[in-house]
Amino acid sequence: MAAGIVDFIAVVVFAVGVPLAAHAVAITGGTAAGAIAAASQVAVAAHPSIVVLGDSLSAEYGLARGTGWVALLRQRLAQTGSNYDVINASISGDTTSDGRARLPAILARAHPAIVIIELGANDALRGIPLAVTVENLQDVIARSRAAGAKVLLVGMQIPSNYGPDYTQKFRMLYPQLAQQTRVALAPFLLEGLADQPQMFQADQLHPIEAAQPRLLDNVYPALKPLLTVRRQ
Image 1 (cartoon, rainbow, N blue to C red):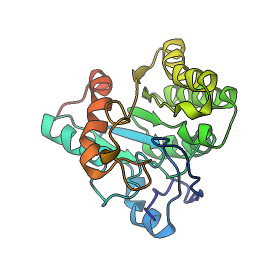
Image 2: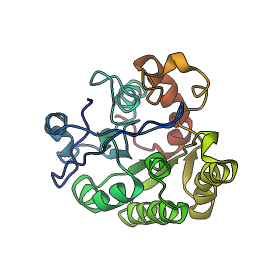
Image 3: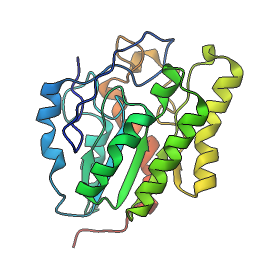
């Protein structure tokens, strides 16, 4: 089982994976050992920071440490001269409610310049009403902004076996919320991968290491305009 990321108040969240149709995302939980190993993330950043508040898709579920898209983002920022620290505050299994509960402590400790929100798929997996998901994401966006951070919302989609009405409403909640709150949007984290089973782990839920650059490429164009700090 892959390691999750410890949150900033030392509460580790565990979640049990539930089988789902191909390409549903963001299930199963982290381990205490992995959370402790990631505890260095909680140090106050020496430079302006980017916090990634996500679930297993951002927490390197089933991957070697340092190979997920968030780690690749850290590398790309260094290569392009963008002077940001990247803090991965993602925990496998997190719902939007979990992220909302953890956020105040994260903001207080990290004082991020940018918050990337990659949450919501577990809400669908657990049948959480869309109104609750929207309310949670609205609160995460509002709190991040109140703390002085720019916000990037990462869109999710779910399989059609949830029913056409729910599937469409879930897909649309991200662009609608981004428009309503005027935050940046990366339309779909798994764009270009959902129809490629060879790019997923055996569970057919989580992308393999070779797919991680594509995840980053799906996020980076929306993030780039928010980057303002360059290395001197």
